[in-house]
Length: 85
Image 1 (cartoon, one colour):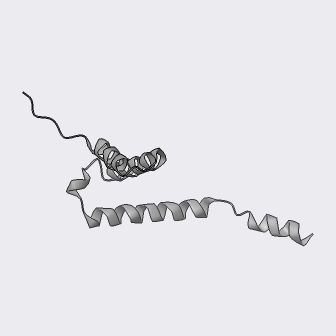
Image 2: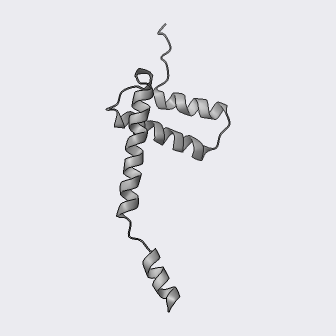
């Protein structure tokens, strides 16, 4: 009789969230976070990583968000010019 295999990482995440009775949207969001984290670290399993990798990923997200914010055109100048009129 074959030994039962351990569920894959994302299935483990789903099972854990479901036992907590969180919403399906929460489940989908957490699964996406885990996927992005794993892909950022070249598909290494989170069990192989620690605080250093988490910090690197959070730093990456922070820099990415700052780039996005700086790239967005500001609506404030046009808004204030119409208010002055």
